[in-house]
Image (tube, rainbow, N blue to C red; front, side, top):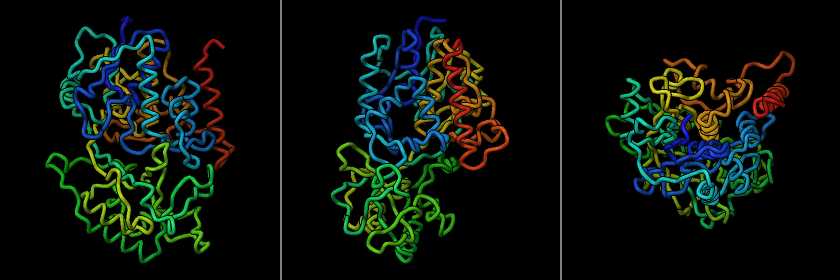
Length: 435
């Protein structure tokens, strides 16, 4: 094995891969093109910058697959989870972070690690004499590097659209209308700002979303599919009048204190920074033009005078057909000296991207074999390498449907708890094979 591991990309996956590999004693060179060359989505040169939501989703490891993935990564010494826990914000049962504090902590840890060398440069093609490389360039892989991979594999990278939700200044939210409450009073019980809509207000809002002027796509974008887990809000609205009421605007588990009853629909905002002066609109990714966003979102009760720190946007993400192109240790079959990690492999979500980075870093250092498929790490890895149908492969969040079924018996939540308990027991054996 080479003495140097080259990791290309300083997002969540690349940062985690660098940390895991360096923690084994390997010498790592982490190549990050920002700020030499920026992307359309990033705004800083920090490692592990969160460009969309600030939530890593549910932290319930007994009943939720992504919460289980959190716990497995913590037990595997994840830098991303360590920094997320250190910069946690109130978010009910979810793990939300102060995005700037989180990125700053990851950046500091990597910069100060004695076995990690930081190289601020764009890599358009890994040199042939680099024999241990992890490509973790994410969904915004530069065109030059994407072309290199395309030529190497003789297969087109697939693509889909991902979207960014707006952020609102807290002091412009009308708290005479909006109130603070977590759904079912989870977490601290008051971790979200809720803006209620009655039936007439909801129907008018839906009509405005559908009629609002949208961003025009370039010709090459017209055939690019959306990712189902991150649909623009107006696309969801177009699927039926009640789609949003059963999606991001569902009012279940909430009561408007003015009337002591559940509203017809609700828009939730989640704290976005440690100061608490910025709040993001949960699930409100959009391709509406900016002026239309301001006009339409101010129709929401409580946001009549809202000022926006950031408006929503849309960008194209790319990913590999991993079941066809990668082996079970994330190596490119056409060139085994290259591994891939993160969202470019066809996982969806911050945590999933970091998890694949964790595995790629360990594989590159030669310190592990693939984890059992009964674990969240192993189930996610198996899905993108051997478990999915190559002809219909699409991005996927971690979910219990990817796991082998548990033994017959438990049902409902007890079934999930049994799967989680089995996963953590099997993870312990993988982390400590000689124990």
